[in-house]
Image 1 (cartoon, rainbow, N blue to C red):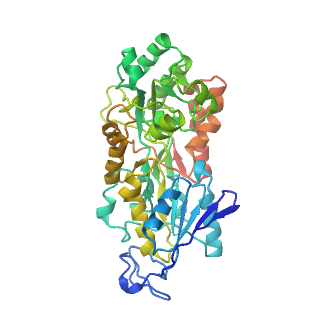
Image 2 (image 1 turned 90 degrees about the vertical axis):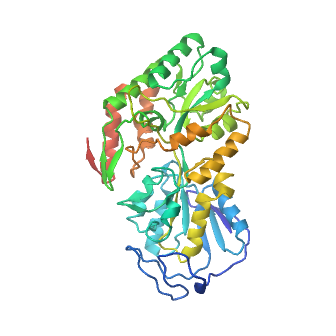
Image 3 (image 1 turned 180 degrees about the horizontal axis):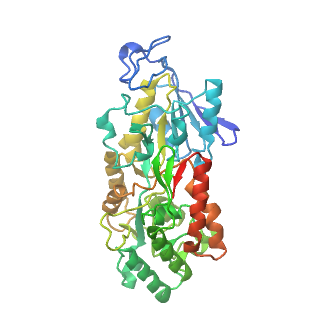
Length: 454
């Protein structure tokens, strides 16, 4: 069964029937935390997690529209599993739909889904306290499996060393560029931010109207300031954050962006706007951005012909010993602590995050599971769309996401949109807006119960 649910609660239904099956206790649950099952069965306690009685039955999975194909693929490959697939907004843009519904389910003591996909990386900031998400590294999933995720990929899921979700995909940033134009104009792909800025100045003089980047989206700080090791969002504990958005690592990148905005090689329009699509999409020389820019932006949205778009590592500041990149998105999967069918729920969770059938072949984004990422990269390289190998820079960037930019309960993108974007529109510099941005982060953090260090 597949149910489509809107964020406002209205629902339309597209239903397909699958055979209903119960799961026998005698077959062993293969979930270490559960020692007995069946109607009225008892449960064992492992590391503080006590599963509810395991009665089997239908597994309810919540997914967004993009991940719907994954759930349907699993259902087709496992016809004996009874599934209820619910399509919802995936908490896109921080809608908090999942949190709102879980709060309702906690009051009514029923209705929790077994497995949920979220487009957000900060769900555990509320889901653990709400008792919704189950600990995965305390007997439910083997360490040998969890070791296959990219370095630091599951950091947003950790609370005091306990893993409460699995990362679906990574959105590590790289430098996308038009290889044909680079070759035609005799430019070298910059490896440092200093060279990147210098090339932007040359482009302004020699090819006015062409772009080396965009600062017009709410994820601009995640592309540029995160990669600059700007300490605006360092989560130091479950309810503690350090906010230093005016330090030298922040101002150096803000000044670079201001320079390129002023000479018009850095757009202040959203890359998803009709204005950008109509007037600027065909004038991109370079654009720092996440792994998903290749397919979602250049290939699908901008329709850039095959053989032109290439990938290079993100530039680094001269003298920096440790490369750093940012991250824009990459969702998570949560397993409900209320599931009465942990065997089927964990089987789906494992398949949807690790399988070559989905993650390696069909997933739109770079898989967080490293072996699946190898398959995914091979498919991208064999597609014939990209100019040269894209695997090496993307794989390297997957392990270079700067770990000191955290995932708080407050939305950095919403704060940037409310604080910096209006100032940019009014012609103010990003450097001049950094103090207001810092104050806004502090205020939002405190409003969400964080102890703030400045």
